[in-house]
Length: 248
Ligand SMILES: [Zn+2]
Image (cartoon, rainbow, N blue to C red; front, side):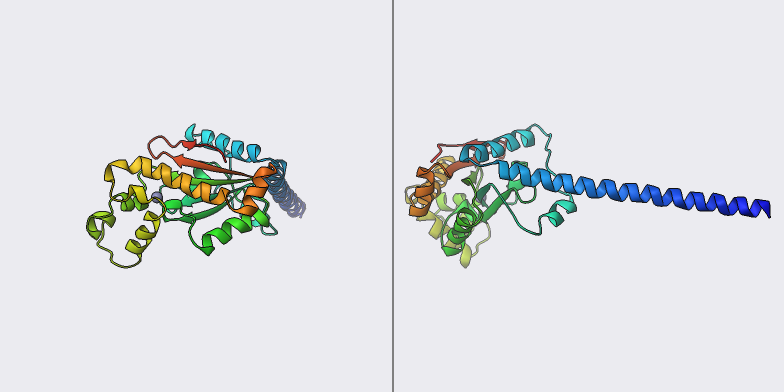
């Protein structure tokens, strides 16, 4: 009888301790989530100038290249805590190339940057322009980064223009892809068919896209007021670095 009471007491204590343990884990988890959320929001809200925004990207790329990223790219809590809204500090127009994972190479987390991706990072058409305008006018981003990259297939298509479709695009596609390359070629017409000038064409395209944005009245006004910057940049697949070009 005595042993039975002791066993019950021991079991009760054991269960009580387990409940305490799980409660402490739950509290710790909630605190960690809250801290992460606050950190993300505070970091982005504290970015109030174009220079701070671009510097955040530069520092993030340094962390990426140095192999010591600090952002929580795989943490579900980051996605969940941002469900009420977003406060990205930059809009990045990048190429759709799978080797250019924008958040990773800038070491930016959930909610940090508003990314628009098209082949050849081209700002062509209302869908792209509207996406950029939304980030600028409604989300209040502080910088617009047009991000090209080395070995860009879309630009390779442009500088290969004049050859047959298979040579230019690698798969003989005679539908939308050639039309897309043709349209992209109008952005940098002097590079059409100049297959020896790929890197120059990539840079020229980035500058054309950035200048196009910088000339838009509503963007030009914000740039003049010091509220926004338009920055061309190129991501180098060979070393992981993003090279920022002339700021606009
Ligand atoms: Zn590309």
